[in-house]
Length: 423
Image (tube, rainbow, N blue to C red; front, side, top):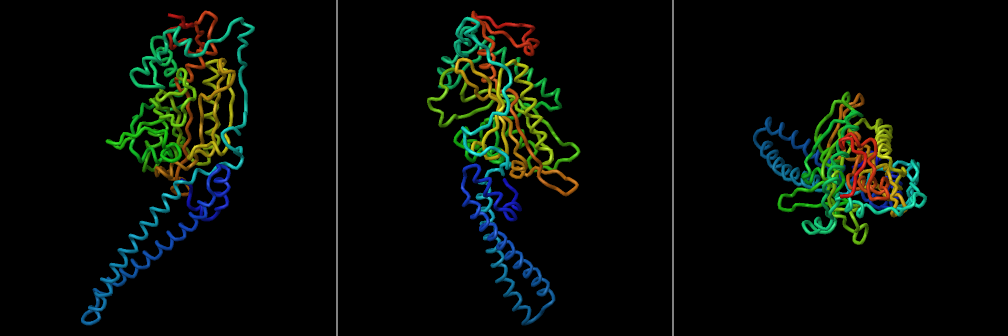
């Protein structure tokens, strides 16, 4: 959540961020009023408690008629304190619920607008000219079936639409990608994690996924647990209610986990193959750092993503999302869009977000800095989302005979194999 001091001292900044996101500015006015009511309630409760304590000392020293009067007032005051405490708690809970509806404060230079108003920052690599090579490219599903690598029919039979099996060379390719991604992350100073894929509500809510993204989350009602849509959630919650040593920052974690998404609202979109599915595996980078480190750390995450996609020899673009397309927790977000030959366009394959101290405030993760104890900053970045990366490899490295050339960086993880051949 945002810093209450910013709301109190610079509400116009919060209004500007809400406006950039396309969200309610009136919520800020309501919050300012609620904050004043909350502080008044706290002051009233503390006044009554102070009087109650002072009265307690007087009772101990009084006798006779004075003592009886003081005891009567003590009883009256105890009831007042109890009611004031209940009112204070009720107002505080309402204020907290309102505050959690406000998205992270967007950086001022983030592009304005919505989903279609992103800005292309870079275009790296050149798409192949299949016409010059003399053949029409096949899409990833056709290639996957030729290679014996993807089985969506049995995935649907067993689990329903948007599920799949990776088989044979498809399964081998995912395992190779996992090992490549983890080795690169470890080489860049990340500690590897295999986190739980089921989390408590506090973890899901603390990372901001029970707000605008709640409809995409799987909830196990009987156990009150959530299936994570990304390893970001359990990695972010790892240090909940902890105070970190600032000398250990930045802490960089790389988590491998399944990701589950309901894909609510995607009816009719990307129904062919494995581009938009209910489950996929992913290697996610996550960072805890000092707030002033977050901007350069974000650039490092972006560079590691670019290095990884470049190593797979996939043409791609780097885009910055507009403010209205940011998730609740992000103050800035970059996406990498890989070239998809059969669609003749770039499609999202990774993203990285700077969440500043927004998630850490919700999860109560702090560090003892020289200036005092304060929330840390958190950042996340997908290094490799397996299904979409497999799609990009199949389509960009396919050959006329239906085989797929293996990028050189992946060959050591496939026993030196340089091509995937039809089965």
